Length: 184
Image 1 (tube, helix red, strand yellow):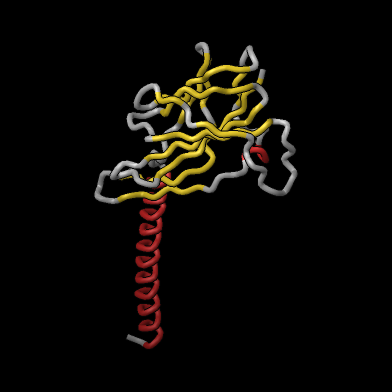
Image 2 (cartoon, one colour):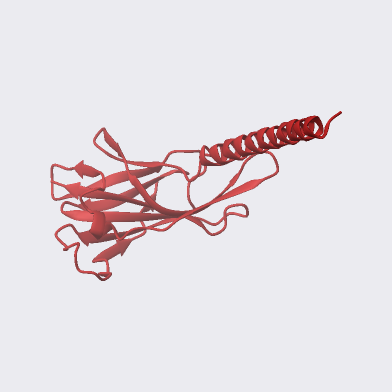
């Protein structure tokens, strides 16, 4: 075998080895992408709705700290910071009411409701370009109706933030911030 043939044979072997390595790397990337996609498809914190006189709307979900059992012995932590609702007031869901005051039902969609809720509100006319946090004009804890529902008094012209808090053994420290705006 000549020197040129040996070099050619060696190059073919290197090319074959590099091709196999490249395929292995690509298949590993595909697996990582599938794992990332699976993690993104986890349930995360529960959604919530508000309702009044048969009208129901889904609230916005703006911040949370949530841990989820993936069922395979692994846990997935979900965290998202909350924007200042006054800054995004035109993006929060609206519920129209026919009177100045009303009592709405706030309901967690799921089997395990929070242990407590706290409600803060701001006047919807609060300017969003203040550049600083403006304290809420009030707060309430709502009245529990059942395991997943709370009664919350509302007034037209306000932006509401409901913080649902879980404090059970497996859910200690978990919370979700929900938001909506009440219009007349």
